[in-house]
Image (cartoon, rainbow, N blue to C red; front, side, top):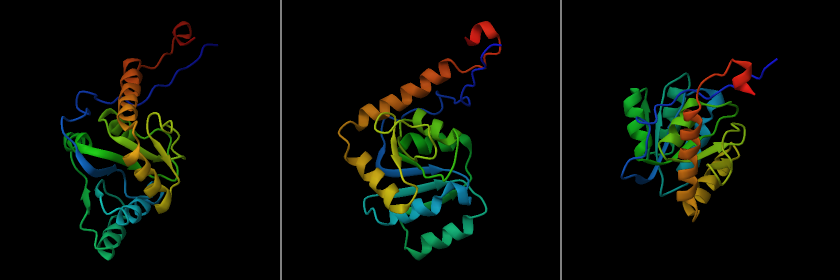
Length: 188
């Protein structure tokens, strides 16, 4: 019996690519606003990072709760954009310095692949399991202090451009081989 190789979701790396200029303090999160995505912890973390601006793309059952959280912390640096078209998501990611996915559980989220392709410095909870810490991104504990510490580490990392490049190269290599091999001779 042959092996089956599962490849990641296809990402349009021509659409999701780095921009010539980034907003150096912009953090993006593209995620469904639901409990397992843990966006509330990200908002709480950013509230204590005076340099940071956060744009959250997506909608979901926690939208009004998250809106109330932003209002309660006077979050003028935090914007909940709601659902936006895919080409606009690509533009937001390409101009963002950071991408954060603090999920309590996730396998290989497409939003992370898109952010890596866009050249964001990616901070993800260890539960996501896609990023190699300090190589293709930064791992964090999924609580506000863990997220905050990982963002500060990414911000101060002298190797950050190497991490950014390694993440994009990882996605490009994955996309180059992105087909499901079902022939036993091909999958070995």
